[in-house]
Length: 164
Image: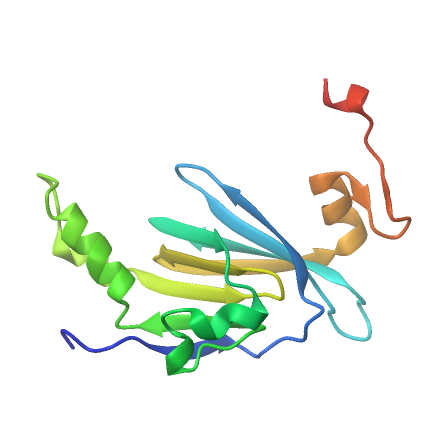
């Protein structure tokens, strides 16, 4: 549907304000975002890691939940504390126009891409990728190893000498 305006659909139920501390890892060939989730009554808090397939572009930062209505999709129903896939994304169309200057540009590649938005309390994450997968793990194992902070003791577990 050429020229259709952006719309969104939820790709996961809305989450509570407690989904927090998003951590982004990005390189030329990998894009992951991890965050703490409440989990369920049997697991308690868990680390959710979302890995995006063939990511082409991403943004992370502003707006927070209080300014999300100022986001270009805010008027179309994008809301805080959720995960969304944007249909008919103007961002993907813009990326395709820019890539058309490349001698090996292929329109078909851009038809595979999806625009995802994850809105948190203090930040918003957006990316364009072919798809995603996710996993959940106990918080103590993954977050502690990833960033060196033991949330259960609320202290730094790495010293400067550990990083040398």
